[in-house]
Image (cartoon, rainbow, N blue to C red; front, side):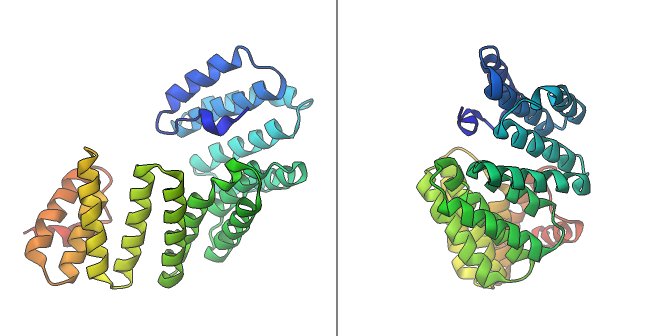
Length: 277
């Protein structure tokens, strides 16, 4: 069963309904794997009690299960704990998932588990190490679903490098992510990857280049009938850095309106508002 193809991560409730319909006719390991994904739908909606209850109810059946549902169970227990803020409790579960997935040659799940370990590591070097290992597995795998992780992993590597101030390396990783997203052919994901490239160019003080990319993104989002408040924010940031504050103000104003509850830190917000006037 190709679990990945069944998911709509933008609508966990719809995904739960689909998993439950499929569960009615599923047996053995397929049924157990579906149940782990039902738990995940609860975790994504921050329904942690329900997620743990679903995973607890599976424990006895897992005794006779194969490797895939066992690894998925570890992953979803760990994800639920991490989402609830219990990172240290999640870490050993992801580590176990790595070992079991590697032993069973489940590349897709091995990559997933490694990427989750990177997310719970507090140290940048450890984050990079796990994501680098995950990317190596993904690129070497003959599983399409494992290879499909390239864009996400390259993005995560770029984020860690950006946070460490290693902007040249971050830019290379974000460009790798963009190339992977372009191969996948999902326009919204391509636009997000383009934003990451432009964001890093701004960090490198290449404001004119970043501005051109963000202007193109603003037009593309508008053509799709959508808005991205962070594109507006970056337009304002680059214009202000280029000494064009009168032009930056309206973009910061639009960013504040579009972002709603997803606003930046108070100091950044205060700076935007000073430019708005």
